[in-house]
Image (tube, rainbow, N blue to C red; front, side, top):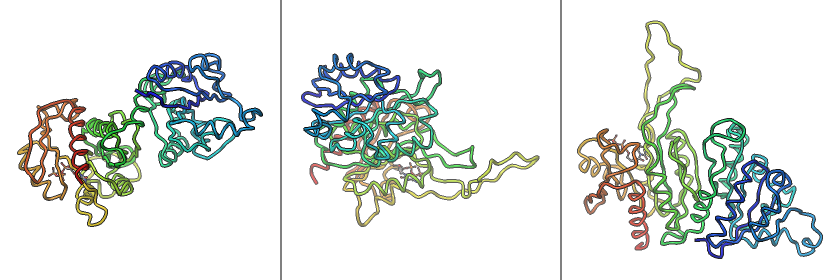
Length: 399
Ligand code: CTP
């Protein structure tokens, strides 16, 4: 429920603005109030009349409204909310936000606000992939803006790919995650997730079968208990968690940089399937087939992020949780891995192909700590995540 929560909804000018009508209803059904603000471009897609009828409040449109500005209306408007939601966040709005522009009511109140901001991007796939948009996204994430979506799929412009605005209920879930209150409130947790890609040349890379779904589930479960989560992910196919700070990386070395930059944290959960090796010197140009000759790849060892952070003498997280993907002697191998790496717990799982765990929706884990090993029954990855988050909360509450 979102009882009593005040959402300031900034509607941007994109075709996805039509979804805001349903979104407003969904938010109000859950007890939130919605104060709508529309950009001029948004009015080309949905009418202020429909928006205000559904919100039950007038639509704010003008920065230079004399009556309201006599009371510094835009400042007040930006402060009364518990959350400012920008949906759809167009490429233009994201650019203005990242650049700190205040050229109309919407962008001015986004600059003036001191409440959390969430954006639901929506745009053409090429606009989303454009380096400028990705740069702006990184800036906004670093500024603490929460991002929900975009989703992948058919687009109104006839193309296919990431760029569709999240569905209203997905946005509602992300908002609920922002307001989550629980035993981990005030705690900061780092989660690494997904595979890493290690380049061979500009078009080829070494990867593994990790989907990132267990890491995403853990981040969501921690967030649901109120934790502030920094989610460092390789190029995973699983959807990203909501209501958390997301740092996208590609290689093990980038993941290490991002994980170290996230410190200090109360706990670190290292669910990523980090590539142990990289190609020692990846080629800058595509390796060509040569008659009769096969390329020889030389490998170099990647940094072990879990071991490095577990063994820090200063600034080590209070609780460090590693994962072990094993195919033989699960408990024995994971127990020695825990000791070797110096982490507090290892969540070990049997990833032999016949278990269907790698890339599947279920997991059967053994939790290894210095007290010994504990078998958990086979269950959904979401349930494993919730059980692990509960354990983490219990341990942090003691310390
Ligand atoms: N890990 C890491 N950095 C690496 C390799 C692994 O942080 N370069 C972390 C993983 O996120 C996981 C744990 O270490 O939490 C176990 O990884 P795994 O690959 O199973 O262990 P290895 O050290 O590779 O041992 P082995 O090859 O013997 O399985």
